[in-house]
Image (cartoon, rainbow, N blue to C red; front, side, top):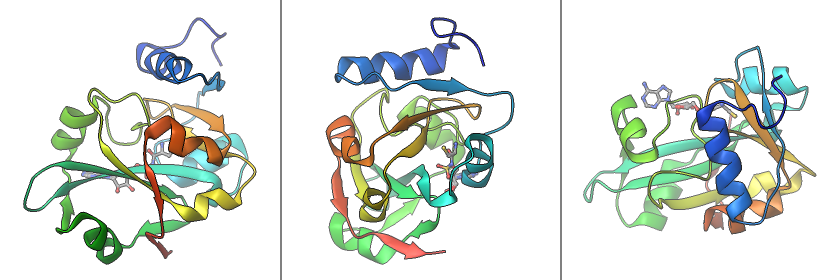
Length: 164
Ligand code: 5CA
């Protein structure tokens, strides 16, 4: 793990975004992949449910990006998300994710995107004492208390999880 102050550009960008919001979460850049929730959980030694997945959707009618930060143990309940949005949450392809967030799939963080993104937070994440989220690359994560997510992202906590 590189020493602090020696972070890659994407991870350093997340650290700056966190600091701007008053958080000093430690970013861990790892040798092994954290591209998927399972890999991230194995890399940091936590339960898969403690991994915060940042999943981007492209709203079907407006085309606007919508971010859902959900537990690694869950999948997004797209019907519940549609009810919140007032339109269907369409799939985002890799180019859309890169363009709208500034990050590649597998490293999309919950905060620090190029532009603000409408964000929802899976209420299930709040049950854990701490969670881990991607820090801008598929090899970097940071630890945070889940109660910090709403303030960090400007997101709304909602029941948007379907188990599995
Ligand atoms: N670093 C880990 C957790 S810290 C991570 O980012 N996991 S993730 O689940 O948030 O990111 C992967 C997600 O990206 C997948 O769950 C999937 O919803 C989405 N994804 C994977 N491949 C594609 C693709 N080709 N197009 C659009 N979305 C994709």
